[in-house]
Length: 173
Image (tube, rainbow, N blue to C red):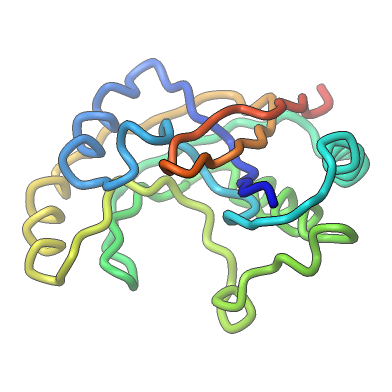
């Protein structure tokens, strides 16, 4: 079984600000670069070529788009999110299209009772006190982060939780 995730890696010109916060509060810092998850981690025996074909078919009509993130919120599960202010519709459509056909069985239970909320995770804490402290330290970040999204990436998550790129697929222009 291969442990995978499908995401968009961000490459903002001012990304170092995100990395400073993640270094302190995100347990996945150093394992995976800043990203927006489209298909949550799943284990399968789907062949690479089969997965690539599914992704290409699923997203063939989705065009490259502008993404902007700004504003930090606290979310259920002791998460600190950097919110998306532009590009949400495209991210939701990518998410929806990817979870069809061969990936439909991997749709996570937690999303069956709530809507997918695209975001960039800045941190996750052990408890609410730590989360409140993290929010107080980060809420003054008013910086906006923007870039053009041109591709979707599949990562393999190894046994040590490290991210290894399996493939990158371009969105249409």
